[in-house]
Amino acid sequence: MNDTISALLVHDRAEHLFPLKQVLRTQQIKITEARTCRDAAAEIEKAHPPHLVFTDTSLPDGTCLDIIRLARQAPLPVNVIVASRIADLRLYIEAMEHGAFDFIAASCLISDLAYILNHAAANAVELRAGIERLCPEPAGTPRAEKSASCGRPV
Image (cartoon, rainbow, N blue to C red; front, side):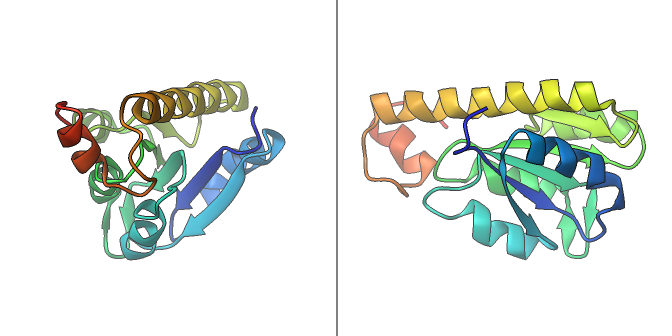
């Protein structure tokens, strides 16, 4: 996988994300971590936000739904994957309805993690390339402004 792919891990306790971190490292993904929604917002709002965000379901100052909302407002496409300690069908449906790219449980197999990671990263790169081809505004222009200037809804 391309070494320019970056991922943000948002959590306040990392035990169940350890297998994910291993997979990210084997794929040579640049990893940044945040402990709160506020810290995550600072990373996601950058002109070049991470391609992927893996978020715990609950954080000291919010939930995964807050992280999904932040990612939808990022200047470039960001795919959010919710990483839950347990399989929770209600939360899965809610996260997916709010725009999560995927939802994984701690029991997820390493091979499944690698597949999800590769698919999510490829999708983010493809979406970003499409935006840059259609709307070559300067980096950091909010996605809503790019979409408006190209006549497309966000």
